[in-house]
Image 1 (cartoon, rainbow, N blue to C red):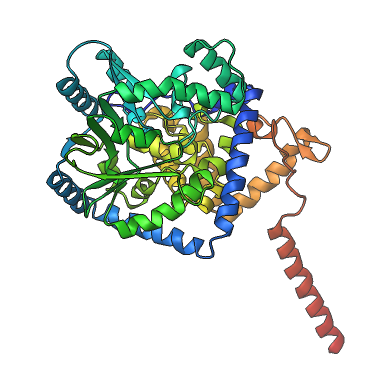
Image 2: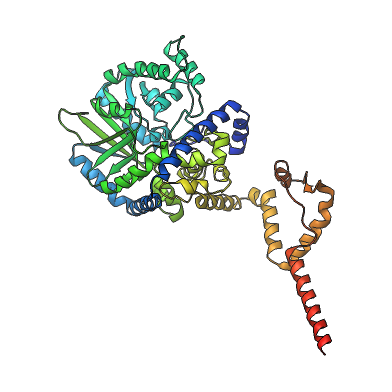
Length: 495
């Protein structure tokens, strides 16, 4: 799997990875079941909100305003965070973020190998591959979110923004726990799995001196940071350790708590179908004798400021990581998250990953969509994902057309030919006549089958009707001609 780090690797093309995923029937059943449950819960929670569309618009306006003035609000957050006793670090890329985190851990925890740090779910740390960096430095990260823990113990990769182990069922989770926790008699009952996870984590919570968290938001006006979650592990991670290191993407900042009021109404409903997250942890700096006595924030850029330059691409940074677009997407629901080759999967991943990597990698992801618009309809901050997908597709094509191979590719030649034909109605009509003659050898039972070249990819999996004997233009001309003849005949009769 390709992830977004300082030195990136080429992700596998989505069509290739998707074909492999489509052969895994168990994965497809797991993904379909989980996304159906979340979608149905979300629908109930949204239906009871008469002002839901107003909240969506408010969230969109808040994020648009914040991104337009992001430099101001980041400086305000950093200033207020440090006034409250925190320390803010700025990381340009993944390597710098990991280096800062490792230096802080060594400073507070010493240099002995095997030092443990507990983590509360943070996709941003997955984005920069922090766990790999920590392990390479002799530091052992322990994921405490249940789904993240399943992924870590199973040596797997996350497949969903909110539910990273969504592709696993209870039997598969039981097998992972049996092997990694040494529990051969463990059953797949939810209560037994939960108790096993609780027993596994409890001692680690109590002995860890350093915690690493992500953040759902940062409040500029107060320098506060917040995490919302459903299990309570987040509360443990941000209150029990002596030292807390929080990694935040710079787009997570909000101006005030009044803005947070809107987000906290839309995020849980969109993410898990809950009216409110069971645990909402908000902390500001350091309080003597209460919670961590050293608090460090790492503000991560990693390509984000580059997106601010383009008005369409900037919209991607409005994402609040609810995962609703994944649950609604017909493509994701069939392939799961691993086919996207990135820590960010689904529709939002299809636009975020290529942009953070300057389209150098994950070039196939903007095409991993039917453009049905379901992602836009459910987005709580109204990100127009289909529009951004089309924008990125155009960028990919334009970049390809700058190379000789791109200019001579079958696709480019075909598109240029079509453009030339469509520019003149006489050429268009001539092409239709030729197509009617040529299609006769491909007609089977009222459909066109086994078309040659790239067109064959369409007819292998879709119905394609033949070109009709009479086009709309021909019918209109005949109508005008018949009408004129009728008028002339009536005029003659009256004479």
